[in-house]
Length: 88
Image (spheres, rainbow, N blue to C red):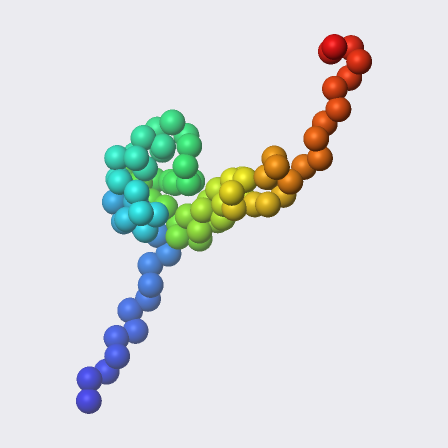
């Protein structure tokens, strides 16, 4: 009977694998990195790496910052603001 392999899952992804994980092109992730946007990354030797937990946390933060995903940020759900007398 074949033994199941118990290879440990990696906690890090290189740039192409992280882009695949996020469903975006590696070029987009490369540009975000150099603009200091996007998920946090670090160098491991010469390689740029992304921690999977950091990718997941970054995606959650993006969802929470979007008014379509976060009803509390929906401008239509807020009361209309009154104009001050000074701006008339």
